[in-house]
Image 1 (cartoon, rainbow, N blue to C red):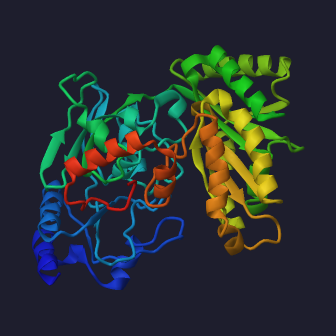
Image 2 (image 1 turned 45 degrees about the horizontal axis):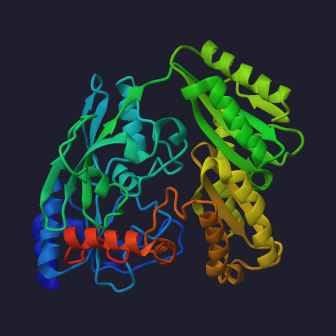
Length: 468
């Protein structure tokens, strides 16, 4: 492979072809620290043309490549396998904001731009890019698009797919397709953009995107409601939507155990209620009119919910600092889990109307199969996405419990499918859930996916072993 690496060095320069183990190490371990792969080299192109030239070199030498952005994925989609024969193609040097068009409400960006960088560039022009994730300070927009990331504002603005108008992609043959059109209507054949969004780098490498922008809201207001049950949370969702319409931009469900875990691991964070409650909902309203308008909508809706007995209590943030404190409770749940120990994660989606039933049925099934297990259930209730994680019983080591991962997955995923849901809502499939996808997808769906993969990537060099 010396000839191949020499060719790569000629394309990007010696400094951007990393093949020493210490230099490659940061690119080889997944974000959760559960797997470390091996690589022939890490390639760090600085332009779209260099990406294309590197892909042509990979095709010529039959070297498989793994595209990588911020490497914040949770399903082993952005790290190489253990063979040491693959290269990691890191896009972090492609990090320019190419253009902001406030009138067309669009922004054209490189795939390696950090999500927070995009949010700030939009805000500087008086606009909003609404995608918001816990990893927004390190994840890249190329990775967000490749996994069709969701986040906390899907209820109002949709997944990343809905926030993208056009793409620039390097194909497995090393050609550059430029579909960077900031058009909301373009009915000229197959929608190639949608092939690559959510494909996890298995069909081509996203190098640029045209993103939708929105007006900055005049005001946002946050509240935390305490409720008796998930069924009451669904009633509150309907009530809030009826009273507030599209002003409702966030609606996050958290169980009592979630907030107890946060309180235990991060005692400095706010404790909004004197007594614990079975469930909590963190909700956010945004108004294009004024803060007074937002407060009025929220107070009226909360008042109606209290009157009907849908909620037990509520705390409304009266300052930016208080709002940030409430959001920290939600955002620290994954961090609290990580500090407490290992757990078996599930990123699932369900019809919103079936979520309470799913929670009521699945918990007892897990308790029967794994007595004493702890359920960390939270997520984006407004769009049907739950993070349904299972922690070990007290006294059982992380390692011993993780040996049950396949059995735990089967209980949870069988229940998800029985309620008409999906085993992956926003994290993707990667290598981690590849077997689960094969178990639950129909033969017709899998064969169509394989046909697309074979047509676009006949050599099979694009992120092999991921999804299919």
